[in-house]
Length: 152
Figure 1 (cartoon, rainbow, N blue to C red):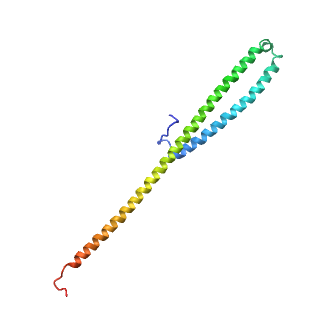
Figure 2: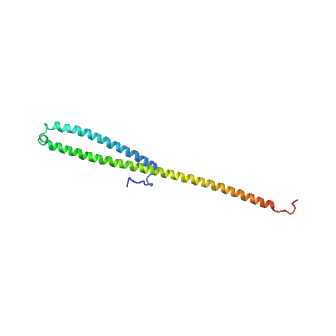
Figure 3: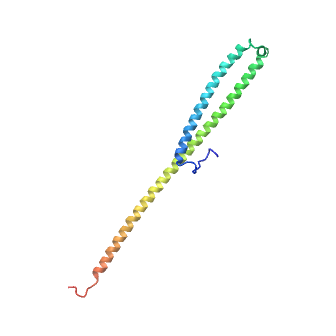
């Protein structure tokens, strides 16, 4: 199931679906940013922990530059993955907003069409009423003009 399109069979109100999706996208962006901040704090702390662990563990002190380079590459990789995830969430938010605006335009168009149809029905009913009244008057006038045998 694709999340880029609206499926009318699974949701009763399309506009509500898009509003929920926009809200969910904003929460996902917030969570992703918070995870990035948390990862940044851990990255700074991790560098200090690596420096403090060097004298304790001989394997780190022997190859400290390799460990530091590996740590830096891991941080860069995590940052790239985080940036891509944030970009994806931003794209989802834009798509959701576009879908919501499209759905609002559709709802407004449908409301205008319903209003025009109601006005047309009202005009038609008034026209039919006027025609019926005109026919009654014509019939009454026709009946009234006939001569009766004993009219005085």
